[in-house]
Amino acid sequence: MADMNDVEARVKALEHRVAVSEDIEAVKRLKHKYFRCLDLKQWDDLTQCFTEDATTSYTDGKYSFRGVEAIIGFLKKSLGADTVLSMHQGHQPEIDITSDATAKGIWTSEAGLIITDRNVSTREVNVYHDEYVKIEGQWKIKHTGYKRLFEEAWDRGETKSLRIIANMFAPRKE
Amino acid sequence: MASLEELEAEIKRLRREIEVLKDIEAIKQLKGRYFRFIDCKLWDELADCFTEDAVTTYSNDREHYEGREAIMKFLKGAMDMPVLTMHQGHHPEITITSETTAVGKWALEDYIITLKNKGIQCAAFYHDEYVKVDGRWKIKSTGYDLVYREMWDRNETKSLKIIDRMHQPSSWEGGQHG
Image (cartoon, rainbow over all chains, first blue to last red; front, side, top):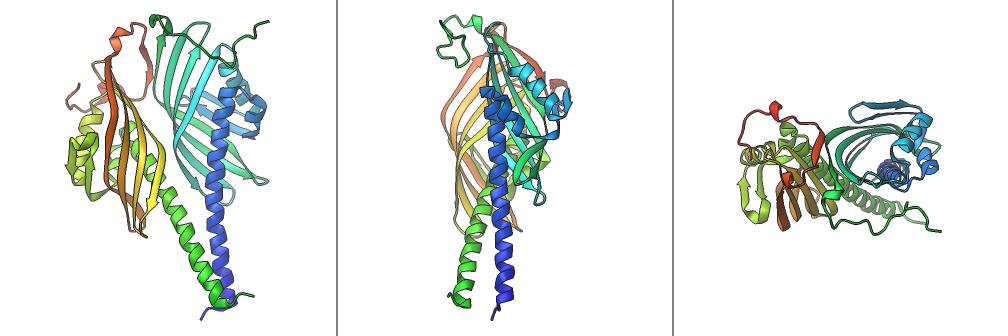
């Protein structure tokens, strides 16, 4: 028959396994927030998603940055204008908790952009490879980057009937 | 205060519940790898997602294959052929039916560009069976019923250009191109 020490050891093992499940969920939530902040242009909240010394290797390393300030600067420059409407989706997360405070993740993503002042649309499909760390109980992105599967672009003017009928970032009418 | 026996029973119950959650997550990751390996054309890695005796019922069972070898031959033939593919699995409904078996439903959206510059898009629902072999979940059967599949000539949109891509047509090893 089991004694109290045995029961305690088993409870401890269970606690660890629950913690791993919670960490996976927290990392997914972090990435969801990252995508949301991109689309809503919430730069302060997006800053909170990264570690101070985070690095990126976007577009096969073409856009590599070191430090959260440089990263946010780049993202703001790329997506910050009111003339850029974006939709970023992350799919099929493969999250691997590698220790109590580190994790890796792979996501496939689709991003659709509408550049309103040029009336151009683009679609890009990428595979993200991320590293995460837990700092004071909060998961943060330590490294993020993606390989591109493809990107395409077209002139929206060719589709004569196409109209934007709602736009969060449209100039306010006086 | 609870007796040791009661605590033991409680631990056993909790362990099983956690095992189920872990299995659900592992199956989601299996399906994630499956889609990623198709789009990245990583055929050896994709083959490893299936059991030896796996069965497919793709496209309302029109693409029916039995055995990993036959499935891989079909997938390689079909997915090497188009220039580019994007497969997205949404809304997983995973049910663990025993310690080593599970079933799952997924909503699929795919978007395909062929060498002849045709666009293909489809919405479908997957229904899968999974088994755990030596501690690893594998696909035992997979297939989908189409809600719709549409096709168009991308050349009609004069401005539409692919401006970046991972797989160049010249880097392929033969096969029929559509």
